[in-house]
Amino acid sequence: MAVQMNPPMMVRISGDQSFLRVNPVFETRLGLTIEDLSVKPFLDWIHPDDRDALAEILDTKIGYAIARHLTNSGFLECTGGR
Image 1: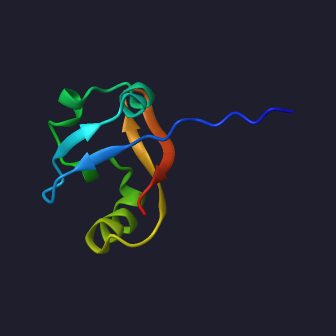
Image 2 (image 1 turned 135 degrees about the vertical axis):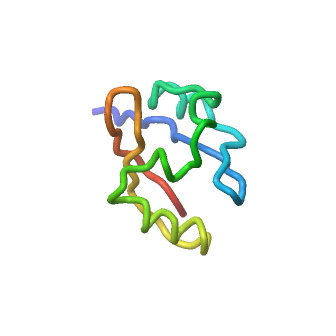
């Protein structure tokens, strides 16, 4: 049986949580372009229940969390932080 690996969603944000860059996988999975995402800070695109844990990881740059991201059709669960 072959194992299929999904390419990772990658995002680069500034210290003020502005989007600097997202990879094509990020745009495709969320159905949003960098221009769409740039209207709000990064954490505003994260499910409210996941924001505190991800904010701590962003502050300390240490850790790992599963974060649900807002998409055009609801929330998508994906890996975030480390």
